[in-house]
Length: 289
Image (tube, rainbow, N blue to C red):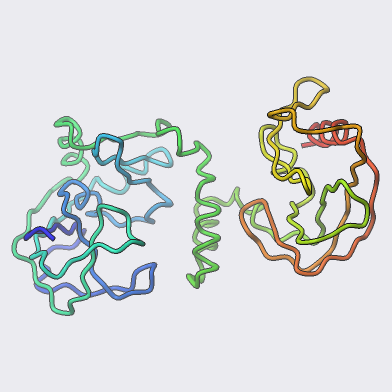
């Protein structure tokens, strides 16, 4: 570890750092060897509900504004950048690559730099090529405009014991509620009648299965991507024989959420089953979306 690390904070006058419990349930202090990355944490806000912080392929930090006006709201205020002896800090595999932590209980700053306006300081770093700022709606291609990348992430937080994570998500993005409600009925497509193993199902076949471009799951064929053009459905690689029989099962059972769209049914009861023309069925359902 380098001799010096940086810690950004909205609070001045810190003589000794207090360790806080992290999302990884460890009492520690976060810091970074990169000064600009630490500067991004001079405002707290709601973390990744407000912004995305990352590094591009050239090793330059970036920040993405998830909602219009968030950067001004967060950073148009004073902030403090502390330098700390880095000898007790270490990187762990579960951390973001530029992050380091220390569990030392009595860490003291070596120095502190005061910024009267954090946003202006970050804009200066951007002009110097040391930071990329994506103002809303601009963003890298891997950050969706609707911020739906947060859904699976916050489901994992909740499952890992961070109670209230999903409530926090919905307090900022109430439009995700319909994706997080646990359905009571599921649908499943299979090549064989009355043949069940481990069932991966989707709520009502009207979201992940039937939204154009999303995959569907068919036993023995696996996950297949498709697109809908007019009244026809086309699968990638053309790996389907539509002459075979397909069945759609309506199920009820004890569900465990695997992601925003998929569930594992531990016990499933078949309510009804129906032989279908898969292509026509998917197209007709997609049109009801």
